[in-house]
Amino acid sequence: MNTAALRELIHHAHQHEAATGQLLRQVANQLPHLHPAIHLPDADAKGALTRFVAAYIDLVPDLLDAAHAVAVEAGIESQIKPVLKIAEHFFITPPDILADHEGLDSLLDEAYLAHRLVEEVNDLYIRHFGRPLIPSNTTVASVIAHQLIGETFANHLDEAVHKAVDELLDEESFELASVEAYRDRIASPHTEAAWKRWPCLSRQLGVGLELEEHEA
Image 1: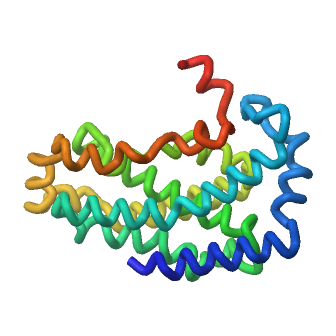
Image 2 (image 1 turned 90 degrees about the vertical axis):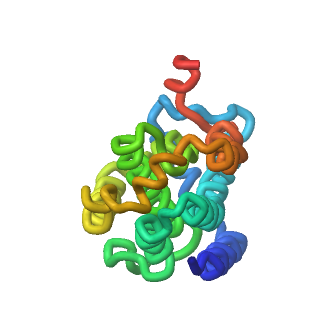
């Protein structure tokens, strides 16, 4: 994994934001149009949402590194690494639909692709193993990011994610001996403990969905 390149891109995007305030202006313009289910702190809604976007982006390299490490420990690196490399590739060489974007608001699109890719892999593993490979808690964060990106464009990004997963993880991927061996180890306390340090991103930053609160 070449997440050092991702970190460098993110660093430059933060510098771009510090010089231009582009994301902050975009967030300010979007605030009046956000879905009412998105809950923001009353005192500093614009700041909270800007910090949320930055943290959602910053999380991607750490998430990919940790996912790769868990895949290696689980003995399924050969199946998972190509999928994680797609998420990495989205950053380094974005799809044509992300061309000509710059700054943190651009990386929000690419971070959404990466997070959604991990979520799709999780869905496949839940179907086959009854639990996720990566119990990362970013689903609510991705719902909020989807809203910030915009329904139409976010749906295009979702289509790109589905195509990538369909091409790399077919049914045969789950019939290999290494995967069967992992099936026997999937409930390992060591594997589960490795992910307990990942709290819910949106709750951490005080940004969430009212639906969350009703279910709590």
